[in-house]
Image (tube, rainbow, N blue to C red; front, top):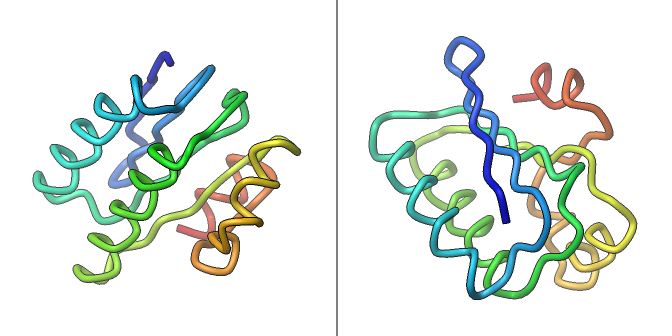
Length: 110
């Protein structure tokens, strides 16, 4: 997994690319934890370049969502490919998070 980070004002956009699994999720968890601990309250996961996500990757997304919910922050998932969307759907995560098709929609929603 490659991970790109972008800041737009007070919004953090994280773009994991490739596979998010047990070997790559610790890096994403570290970045998410650091950014949330530093005060980020608005987070967009741009998943348009994510090819695969395992339960370890889902766990990081859930962790981010729980931390943001506790601090009254917001999390939006953007650009889920069919296979990744299916994993989120089967796990019940699509009911937990706001999901949009485009980054612009996600930024507006967060």
